[in-house]
Length: 79
Image 1 (cartoon, rainbow, N blue to C red):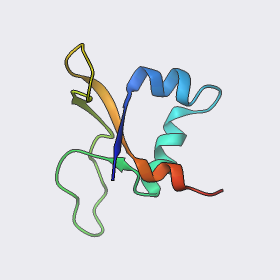
Image 2: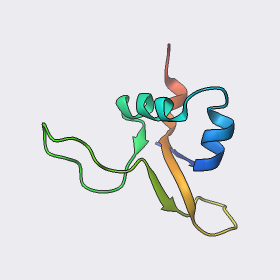
Image 3: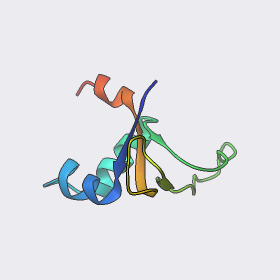
């Protein structure tokens, strides 16, 4: 499985243009498409992990950046 590294600002201003980026992230997270940092919570506990992370995307010249890591399975979604 591939992972898309999407800069936080680009996700908000381009990917979700015209839509609420928080709602888009929530929907992606519900479908298990957002890769989060940290330990998964125990059953019944709320997930307090952040959806964004500081990472160095492949072939990114500027070093590390705040990104959302989205699983490539997002391309296989149906309505």
